Image (cartoon, rainbow, N blue to C red; front, side, top):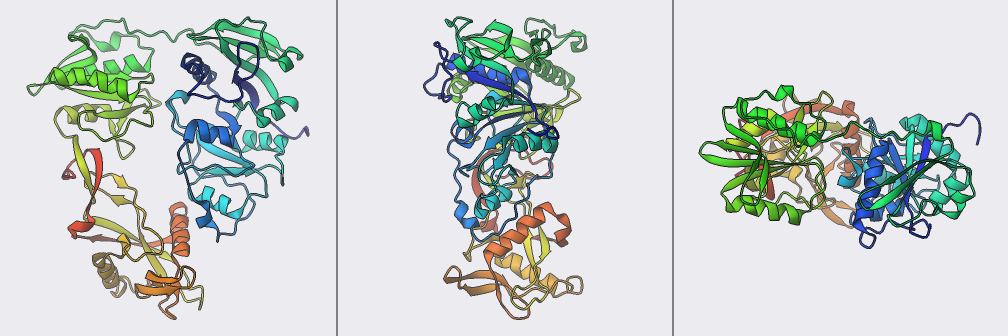
Length: 547
């Protein structure tokens, strides 16, 4: 490796079988779950900025069912420059993807086992990657870098991870060819091995036994043992947090000041914050309140009703949550669940199960996310939840007020200046952004609703909008798809502006605001375009509930 090239400090983190063999893959459905839990506990304790694995492991372990037909991006012609999204992140998952097999409709992965933040994806590719695959990654804002023409240049890949993303510590969590390549090329600085409890300390993989690594720590975990080795034990990065003791046994009377309590865990910090907010609102509130067969983190009596708040910082299945919730329902108590990380199956479908995600800000304050649609301060959330200003609705209703954005799109045939329009973001009556996606090459598009088309037409024909030449919106024949559909077209030669190229121009406008040349706020009253089925917890503020 060239002296000019840099690399992150790399820790190989893996599970080892009882006889000292590296487990080929983290098969979560077959390997003992207590060992899996210990594996992810150590993962979090390292507090690394990124972890790395091969794309198939990333897909199978964390994404699983996500699919995407990349062939629809086949008309794009892409350069071979690294693609770095504008957002700056603090946590990444690095995917070595020489088969170009990643399929994800998000630029990050969401797995409660990985800690408090969602790691954003970085794809490491060769320059022989297909154009359509690169176009797909950019469409979903997934970062990628090139390292080699047709095989991975690991020295260059590590250098780019270090210099472009400021990754100083990298967990290597790949037990296949990628992991072995980095080990054999001497990139690994430390080894973190989780093994069955009955394993002897001397049981280590053969290739490690031949190397000069020093023991740093050997710890008994909940369901396994942990062996930690480094090239230089005196400079090993892992530090145990000896102050992370939970103060769950601390007691506070209803008249004590919570400010006098020393709180180390997010669970207790949020619990006492809820307790404080409820008492500030004048409600009778108690912490660690016991019922017949339940114990609420915070129990509240307000407005002649009973409420419970449960703070959950450790993984809990949906089935277990339902079992605990049933006890509250039986006793006439409305229980609200605040999860630090929501698992994939914590869906927003049932009125009897209020599930929300809490967020701790850098200054130590708490916020509550309504499924990512909007975020409330803890004070506003507690007050509005207890006072029925957060309500479960089966349908979500679009606001009648929509924002039309105009984008320049010159004619590909005659070169005339033209404009198209898009509606983004679309806002619900509970003031939440809605994700809607009109299908390509069909006439039944929301943006072409007659009310919208008519009001856009009035605007571009007025003195205020006359600077926006726009062709007639009508059905035109497309030779590419072999049929006619409602489309934008040239105001001069009437050439069709194909949906694929319109979509490309709209996506560009998401990242380059200067592409948006004008706005038009209009009111669309047609009820059939305003509502769709989407069970959700609705917080409209000063507006109307969705139903």
